[in-house]
Image (cartoon, rainbow, N blue to C red; front, side):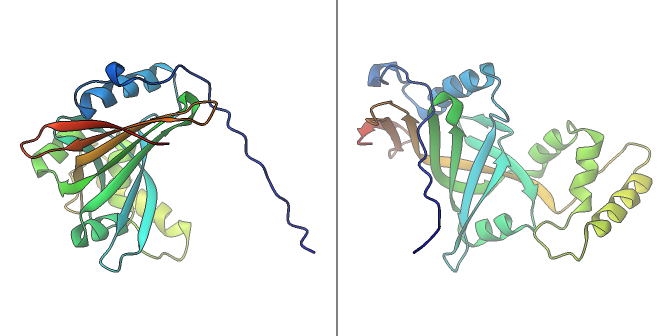
Length: 216
């Protein structure tokens, strides 16, 4: 007989009024802006944290958390090492998915779209706003590569501190940004009776959006 414990997970998200179609904006970016602002107002931990799911040419999927740095009508932008596993995946298959898990609000947003590199000028405009330590960090790690110890990273960090001691840290050639251009965006809201509200925006030919309710 197995001694494994069985854990029952109960929903803890706050109850709220049902989400109605007439409450939603005409487009997903406008609606995302409303929910994102509300998440920020609630002082959630890293409200801009999103799970990025990618799959390479072999079809094997990987998900990891990255930080949303900006969004507009063109899509959702994040930055990373361009030699990382996520970047290799995107170069082989640029179909990706994002998930914003705002659990304290009983909400999540799922984005499906294509990831494209943003221009270097756009990357530079963001890079120069990063704190000194964050700009150094971009130079330190060969992201996703195998290393033998943390000591190697610490030594590289000290080397970069000495190299850029004047505070002028150039943009690494292997660091940049991606914009996820959405073709489907789903807004999900928790309901205590488990009849959750789901609305899907789907991009149409010409750039307009179709909005439909989806069964939970």
